[in-house]
Length: 237
Length: 128
Image (cartoon, rainbow over all chains, first blue to last red; front, side, top):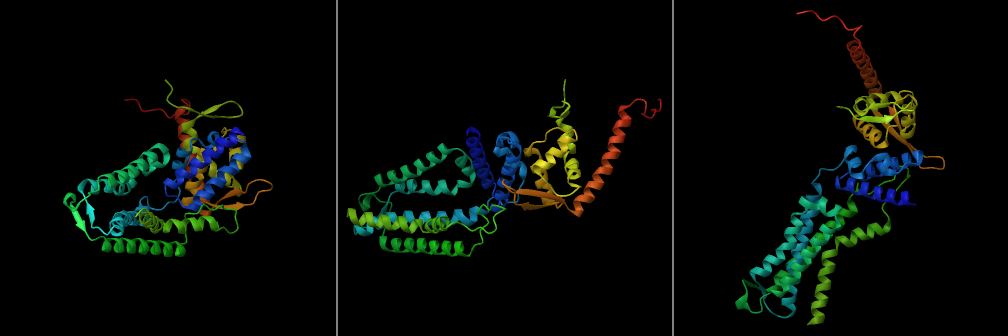
């Protein structure tokens, strides 16, 4: 029982390490199945047979996509969506209250924190995935900066550094979020993804319906959040 | 002072220096596959039966993966009877050629090493 638990942890770690190395899903599936085959034959524990998961993943030198291909494919669109969402959530409050969108330097700096945290993700993503507390610290930093930005928001145009009509900001940011979500949805539908971990012995395997739905929902996260912000603002108003 | 670390123990209790096994395991694995397609545990058992000790999966599989990438072996998954499926490795033509080349080189190298280590067989060095 204990060996099963430690083996499961080892296999989870191996999958994570191979993911971090951008190894194709089919190669990950093949590696996991090979390891299971040998453990079944020898009766050894995973760590005994293969050593630490991280070291084993590194030693395999499996085919992978270029290390930072995901930055262009996923990170920059995510950053654009986040910027649009931040602008929308600030502007929609002013629009509902029939006021100008007022921005102070402190508020602007605080709103930039989550943007910078995401832009610098390639530098620390490995550490954040391996150590859960780092991920928690980053989420806390992003959340607190959002909360503090509301506290330092200017109350009058005299306090503001920038005062603009919120309507174009709301429309523009909403259009960016929708366009980005449509683009991502089309790309998801067309892609022959090599992300899925494929069991080499399965005759035919496709992503589970739940996974597909989850991917489509994530494509529309920013518009969904924006609608929630709009609803909350209208309710509070 | 010991400059080499011990490798896996054989059935006779001999522990070959791990450096030796690291250097020769590739050639030995190709040889183990020369009789026909085989899978991880069978290759390990074959090498153990011939006195090389128990090779770990963490040592063998990265090597086989590199050989697969280099086109020296091809692989095929076959369903297992009552257990998980097995990944069979098979030498390609290129793999057979590489085995022949490495074997010839190894015989030459081992002969040189044996001659050098045995004072009786070592050629006399010219006196200065």
